[in-house]
Length: 252
Image (cartoon, rainbow, N blue to C red):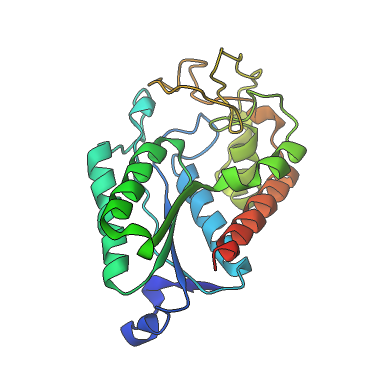
């Protein structure tokens, strides 16, 4: 059940302390190639968290999303708003501390931008060190709970579903077709596999390194956006929202 934190009076909000989980989306503002808007991660993150909360059997209090993230690897193109990781980590910790001070005991940080994962994991550890397991805090990338279903839908090979590729482009075609400039899609092959590191939404990465998103093509996408369709977008969206709702209900 979706309940928006900002739409409640304080007595009504307080009444949910013992029964509701709190959820917030951390997104980004950055280039998504020539065919998608710079707010893609925010649009998708908002849609996924809202729908997942609606599908939950338990009440979920949804906080306003955070639209700025860690995106220095997109500085080659206009439109980015990137923040230092230490500030983002402190911001996330402060949000969590406020949720705790408001009397809630469970919270989910749902990430829709891969570059946010390091500072969000650090925030989870900092809160855990201070509050232990009394405050149940979990962080996840929304697509990670639906790997099997995403794999069954995708048409691209490994390396074809990265940044602004088949997955994100399909979802935007389904959710916000008015913002997709299909005529500007630049066809590409899957990104070549590198030893121990695969640039794919579902690829394995044995190590981390800093890389610019114009390394593989100058447009800035990773993968095969030309394989995207609104039909696939609907299937992807239903998969990730249903699995995220199942994940949220599991910890009730």
